[in-house]
Length: 413
Image (cartoon, rainbow, N blue to C red; front, side, top):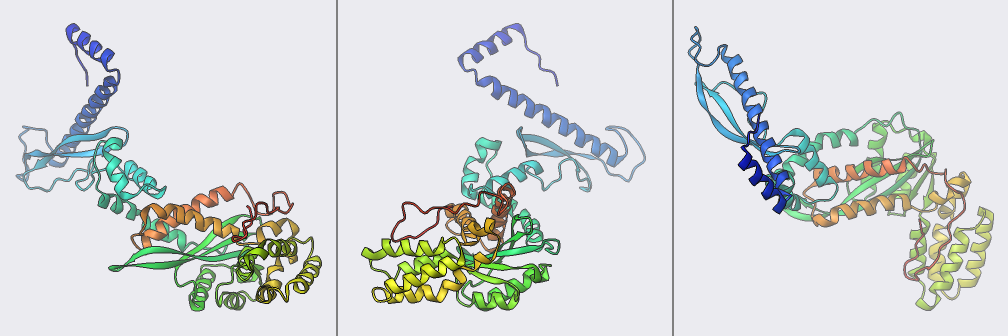
């Protein structure tokens, strides 16, 4: 398509550009859209010619079908914007263009971009508001939701993928709750999550499943599902968890060769919750001394000192630690370079934090499938990050807890 300008018209355009330089880009985009529209129109006319088997106004024996004008519609293309089209028709209404299918209003690449923006944290309503500026066409929030639903099949394939090729030695287990729309009400729905660590120290999310995290039956079914997908329970050596009711018993039944590691952070919080405020600092220091001992033998010696020191002052706190001390020190049976990661459930807590960060702007997740779609994207993003930091390959020195908040015993990571 050629653009012809007379000298006076060219001078007028130059003057306008000097006053408002940004107008030149607007003019360029307008001309590009017009040229693309013309190109697509000619392609569809060619399609109709081939379909009918004759050129316009050509007389030829036929089945009585003829050209019958056309109708106007538009399509939004990536990097171009909304393009106006004149779609030709035949008299019998049988012709369907393959260049621009009747149902397509947005180019496929642009649909993928919309899905990506939604997954990275932009809500459907925000996308709807900014779509006019981004792509030259306003897309309703319901259309954004429909576009994102196209990911469901891919997400389900990822959730159901075969695990038989993965030799998993450690499992990190936890659950996280979301406000989710169920039928016509909004409920707090837990999602069970398992992260596996393979023989090379690579972390990966093995499964996501909605279910009651307080229910032993739900956890049993979740573990059975992992094994159905190919997870070899004989390779699992350790499960790291925060002591949810019944979880440890179910885990040892489903993975009989594996040991249990209780998250030290959760245990420390439970212990400190039973200690008066004026004693929290001192008790926290003693608990940390036990957990960060150089060997299991040293840790048990420090624990005996802890019992003697605090048995009379805070007996409930001492009993709380007594119930969990064996499972808190299980990590000593494994390679020293893995200790820093096996002490706590920080790995899976970090993932849960990313889940919450993404779903916070939404307040309410649209449903179970929508939740899986968002979480699967976050899992894949985290796995990409983890691939650069294999477990046990970093410095083996233990972290030092500094600036300990008395009411919130946590480990820096």
